[in-house]
Length: 225
Image (tube, rainbow, N blue to C red; front, side, top):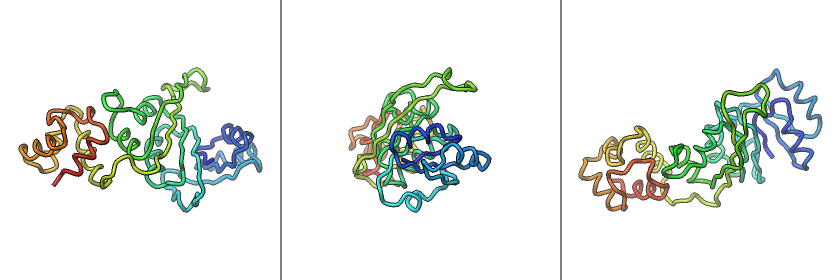
């Protein structure tokens, strides 16, 4: 197990006592003495910034699960970075802000569906495990929390150049009310050419990005000149 943001070690100890080999990552130097005292020899501690960590160099080639109460302000970047650059992490079980969890697990038409949802779907399956009420925390936070589980796919869900896919997805969600036709026009296509590309993919040119699934985005990316 690799834990990000170990804090004072309550989750670290629980994981270790359950029999896991734990690498606990914590950036805050002020917390390290208390963390070391709490954890003792039950886990390996690493002071590092998970937002800039070289995951392959840190974790090697063995299989890992990331289990963490992620700092809410960096949760999405960490999850997407691990999915993109840490193939040895086969599963993530993380507690994040509720809206972030819903966004990571969202599908077309869901309120939270957006760029992170599509990027997660490219590499993993995601589901909400449970919502966590504010009342169980002290001090009580101003936002709700949720636990989300992401299981890495053996291969990306679609066979398409990832940079081309990213370009289409980013353009599609750049303006929420913009049609996918207009999104393609923002990438330099004439209106008629955009319509031809979309109809060739079976996509309504008047549809919006939040209505399209990963496979539709991939088809558009493949068809773009």
